[in-house]
Length: 384
Image 1 (cartoon, rainbow, N blue to C red):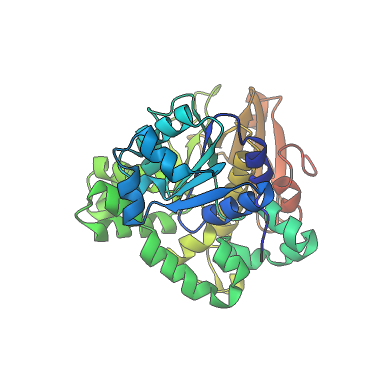
Image 2: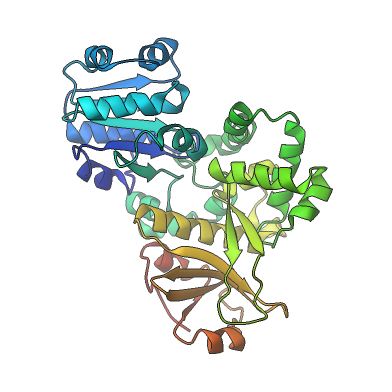
């Protein structure tokens, strides 16, 4: 089953511009699949080289243009999968793009801190980067149909959107456990020599339990037995490996606005639930509000990323506990979202916010209208 990714056509349109194309994202999010789909679509002589294989690593480490020419041969597209596994890959890619300008080089990697740290400096001005995340609502809606995908909402809230979960639902619980156990910490462990992984696991579980709440590094440290500096380091690494992401607090006009607070969300609901070993149905859960908020905000994040819309994301709260779940800012324009599961629940936006930000658009999101806001960036439904 091939579910077309939203970035596929964009990447094809950017090929053969004398730029290396970097495709990165979490493990098992579909990077290799999108590359294979692109190769079928373009239909030119191509080769895929896997950086996990010893002889490929050996061939590409400390190389030169003559050796690379023999590897490239007559191919017009060269894909280096798991490129971060190759020593000096940044310099190797630079040699390739400088000496073989008519060959399209595509490099994939499993996380931003691996690939970005290795290739960024040598490839300044020579690369285009694309982030592949688990399937979005929009991608699944186009494939299965709008109505059918809406019917799958409970499944998405509990098991998430990783490709193998979607295409093989009969194995979803087993696969999510495997993903959490085998892949969740792999990048961090390999690249950062973490000596006490059990404390990292405890931190991830604590973040999962505090989903959608403001977090304190000091409190997290007390719970996990880590100092504040290590807590912040681990959170940075978890973010760079696409396990979690942070929202900061929006503040511009009011003295009472929180200025340094942060919330943490998971990129995928299923991964969060696997960390807690909780795949119970919605009707028996106490965390449905947090799951719903995480799902909507993470889906907006995918939509912005896939459409290449550079909007900033925040939440808003004051010292008197007035709050708005989610804020987007683009070109000095604000959109404010209150996210509630129950359509019947009455929602009002704080008067202090509306007075301070008179031009902000405000939207009430619930399980009846959410899909409208996951298909388009702008106004997707009723404004309040």
